[in-house]
Image (cartoon, rainbow over all chains, first blue to last red):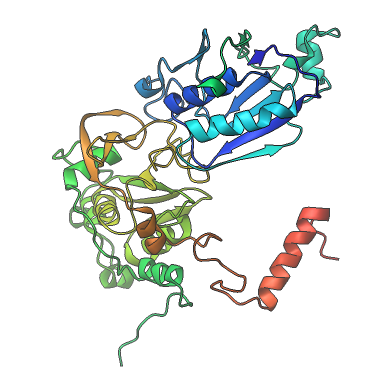
Length: 168
Length: 255
């Protein structure tokens, strides 16, 4: 997910690592809380795949009803959830947003979690990026967000949030 | 004096549990109906005849052989049943019986079976009526926990992943679900084919109970080594760490 935001300081990247996998409801609550904090330039959610069909064995091809129609409503965007959310990587517009993200995690997560700073998104393009996007990438924030070889577009662009949870 | 096998060394709870699993002296914690075990395995419908691959041994007329006379065939072999399997995956978050101990249990206690050990799952193959009996014993005992051990015939992902919010091991095919009454229900067979009815597997163990019954060493449970661990640092462990270091940093080159 890409959101536009501006800050006077340098962008920072953080990784939220919950001690449990999140249900779609908890993931939606957390992502909305983070989104409302503002300052989010990039979000990547990662976790094990939730297949729509049984892919192997005697039941191959049978639909997995539990994984159908999993949708996250983030702001005004509906995002199809294809993974069990286990890790969230963020690029924030500045350091001042990190405490807000921590507060959002404490509000949304009913179990322990860790947040660490680091560099989690690529800044240089790979050969696969070049094959998909060409030489001149208009918005370099897409680098490191998605697998350039993915068959489906998994990128969602969010607009600037209109409210701030700190006032709640 | 009768011989008592000594299966495994150590005095920690993990060592004791490992000995219990190897000896087959496991505690029965629940009683899952035999029909539910058969449905979960998914090889045949409960009450249906056992398909066979050969006539009963009595009808075949076996050749004279001292070993055959000495070793009585299992009921499944005597009847000529097909070979079928059950496969379990155990969470590394204090799963009840990590793969090698399921295999030890099978190899030592289950006649006519073929255990196979993999990193995150363990399969036992045997004649159909034999494997049904063995699987029921396993699922009724402390070797099984509805949340941390699941029968997964395929797509076994989950052993090394974090648990879900409700404390269940991740399952890509959603074969089990946590009911509102706190019981875990089997909703699909081990290969992900939906069942006609939900099968009650009982309540999952609490975290303390799982830690008490687990066979896995963990730093946040019973540690394998260290000052309070089950093993004292000895020459073998130091050599192992040395080999690991060589492998990790430079590739293993014994010269």
